[in-house]
Image (cartoon, rainbow, N blue to C red):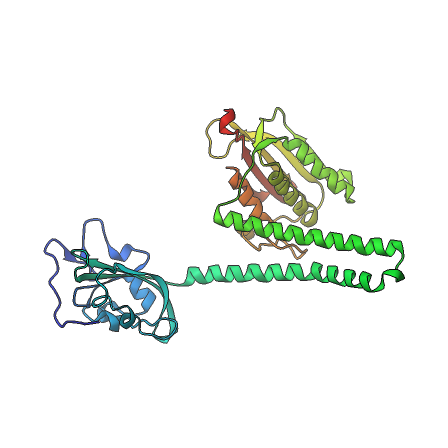
Length: 375
């Protein structure tokens, strides 16, 4: 990288701002969220905005007018000097820049760097080198989230798979020693644990589709009131007392087109949370409601509330985030995150608050959502 000794004069139509960059009407480099560093045709820094100062810990006065390779002595993860490797001023004249990559500043400080080579004419000499800098905090948060997801999945899978492996190995080795009732009990346990693994894998697939925006909604006519009653009947069959639940339906309900399997997933999660973490009567209210984000037309609102301790005010903003758990009674902490993704994929909304009985109250609204070919 060849560096000259003189600094070119700035264009006459601009004035130098605090960052050292030429100012233009309505543009202030210090307002940019990312670091901006500009070097002139001789390789000396002529612009160093406030974000660049924060990210690199280099004072602006120590940057302006100095060679870029000294202001930003970047190295790649293999320890190679970045400007020597890329040679923006003496390299191929067809290059237009460098894509964003993770580089290191002195002391091991990580920074995301991308560069743009500005030429007056294609294949001409570089007149300006524009460098964008970003901190790695967002990437680190994403990596921590992925690591936490992997750890959670590994923990949740270990228990049922250990059980499945133990029971099947025991049955294969000592089949003749067990009575039919003992065999049935062990096989039922294996079946239940296999279902648990299947549900966890389904949750992971849902999270992947939600994060990538690929969650598909297959709309069909759905009777929400009937779906609620099916879930209540399932809880009663599993041992809950019938008076634990109260279902209120306000009719007439609008014709709802939604994905029945995903609606069942939402209802199942909300009712299970209310039964497991709440107390007293679980009330499910189904009623028509203005569609989310619409001034006219109707949707269907479902409100699930209990009479337990409820959710602390300071935690309500985190209820629909990954890994949030309202208590220590098990669970992956992924259910409500998936519920929110499903509701929003239908164009609806979901909120959390405190119910009349003091417990948690979840309310989601699904718009009518009639397919276009039937309108």
